[in-house]
Image: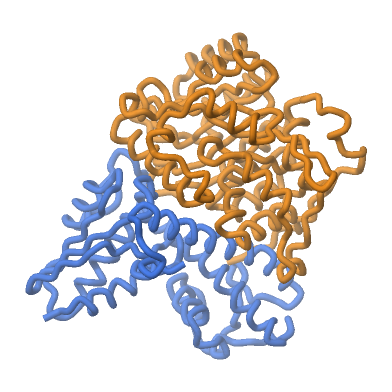
Length: 343
Length: 229
């Protein structure tokens, strides 16, 4: 819970990791992967939040509990596994590692699973097993993940649909999609989000939370999300710009509020890429600069409360303490205009 | 003898197709070696994982641009620190098509991708031109009446002319200045909705370019002067 100026905010960090990128658990691709993550971390974090690389490779359980819950205002953190076994032989961040941590700290975490459509029938069995063992309510899917000779997949592939059908059947409602950079097919745009459009239309009862709101293809994401009411935008990667480039962040959040509305945006730190403490503090203090308000409007305290936690709480059926709820009101309807054909 | 400024000048004519900015301003030129009629160009990118398709296009375009300089007979382009450095460096050296460079991972060439991003660039540039004109007091009706010949000769105006040519859209001075997706003239009544989306495209491109510059600076420990913000 975060409190500022007499207002209280329930905080759900909808995208967190407990990863192991230590040198003994990575190959050259894994090394490139974590180096790239580290550059994102160094480039977009305030200086006092930048870790040494060794810590970034593998931080401790105590670090994570401290950063999220002791100082980071997080009420509930959603752990999103990212296996990446072709880069990190023991797994970068598996459901099992996450669950072990979650079990030690009851009530703090929601553990999500994942599925691997390229494993076909075995993938379906694995998903059933994950659901049975951990009671997962959501999956994190990384369509750029390598898998043997395959260098990526799409949400509208045959086996993806089979797995999404199983999600529907098991009641795994929240599908977190992390796009790109996808290698297959290499001649197409690596961050293309159009497969989300197909899957979202095909599975109207599932919710598709597109992580980092489709960045760097914000326009394609907004276009799709305007037309598909079950598509949400996750703020991981987008929200740290609040520090380095606040005007750019203003544009992103202003556009998201316009195109998809305040009910379909969720806060996430992407820990340990960034830390929730400064993101929450800055976001609550944030306002769209005056000279941009004509075009982008403003962001209200209610919108911030929804984005910081209430929207995700609704998706995951969390019991929000009464004092942190908003008075019942009409849902906000995005005013995203009808698409107009553009060059 | 070809000089380094001449080579850099040629590379300033090569754009990152995704960002619609040129290689020199983006800081992607890591080094040059000139030896008689031979030129070696080293390129670097913001991350180990930058999309190989755009990297390939930049490397091929860099070779073509430098080869066109008088006095240059042979050009080698090297891509530094990338997961497909070897494939791209070899492909450019051998003059291979993209599907030959990545036979297992590509199911076509890159023309469609290039066109898609030219359209995005064109949309974003038109948004900036329209916004500048509106800010200067022009009305939507004025914009509808404008012709290509009336477009300003600033960076956005010139780039719009180039993109129209590359996209096969009309470039004659008497053609309508602003176009929507199917090439039809943009009308005054369409302008607000067009601009709403076109500005979003511009935001996306500018944001992406900003992130790329930031990551490149962080990755190679460069100063802000070396990679303009």
